[in-house]
Length: 193
Image 1 (cartoon, rainbow, N blue to C red):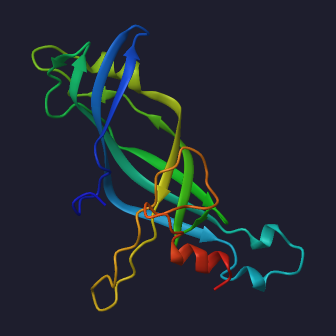
Image 2 (image 1 turned 30 degrees about the vertical axis):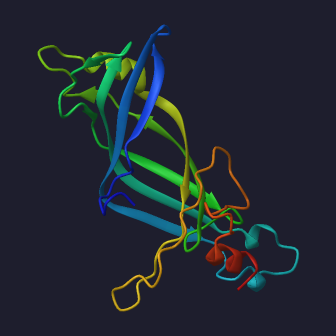
């Protein structure tokens, strides 16, 4: 949910470039095309044979093509003009969620690992592609995404906006809305309703 756009809100991060130089940049992850999701598991865990734990688990996998753009860069507090199109080539992000910490119709935590490709289009007057590729690109970048419950439209209108869960740094079996109440859609699903 970012102004109706298919992208995450921009995130600003600070890291030590090459192990000693503080670099601050804004990162923008943009979805290309559609998000594909599939879930494998029982519609209702009560449909499983008694004591069959694996049957009671629903595994949901989501795939999407995205690009990663970098802008608003400062090196040791000094702005560095990277231009308007310092970004990666499109790449696939794959995320997986399992019950009880994730249900596609209730949200929760999704985990995955991505390989960030090389950057291109970085720099104004000089090519900075290799600097961003060396600093950001590479395999085995862990992802933990907190998804809120989707809004199921009735007559083209969302009846009520769902709560926005607090983003987590670890997989959480009890997601909490900022108000402190557990999301009702998830609570009902976990209770078998």
